[in-house]
Length: 289
Ligand SMILES: [Zn+2]
Image (cartoon, rainbow, N blue to C red):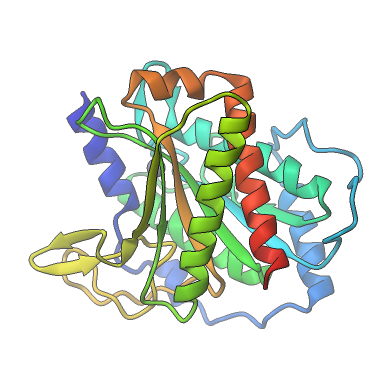
């Protein structure tokens, strides 16, 4: 079962061939005010399940200065890892909405690429087509609102049932390489700190350069949402995708294949402590820019 789940997970994150969405001409960069408006529009998408967002920011330290795109991985017919009653695609949304709430409390503008069990709004495809279109749409949304930071939110699955903890991927082949790495280290440290303060011992699995995430036939293949343009897919085809235009990381929040981690994933306080740490890390990174 875990092997099958891992295969699904691997396929879902693998760099996919360019799709129709990648062929669209680049859109004009929005102005800061347009970015804020767009963020509000995206967040008001039908089907929102966010009932926790505060009605007004409680702090103005970062008010209006930054836009953060949170991207819950998978969706639609792509569940990601699933075991012990946890389905990754839905768990990812729950984490994203918690992080959104903490960031909004600090006055950060937040875009969430999908807010329910489906793919991002407008993506209706299935199988590889849906997955591919969905990945391109996540990147397009982050770029359209001129995000300062992009964070893709996942949980892990492994054939090794003892594998557990949190790890964060960053990409070294980007112009933002140093910032990607610093963002990865910052959010991981804050998540470990935050959960420890709440009484949870979570394994720090470190930060991982995703530029050679999966080698196929001697090629290094990165994660779609983090990798630069001009790469080749696992099948060897040139990739015409538009990359994210801001520092970004992909967080793997615990292992759905490990029973100790699953207990944390089912613990509301533990989830909040991780989400709080991720928000703190993002804010620390933003303030230091
Ligand atoms: Zn995933």
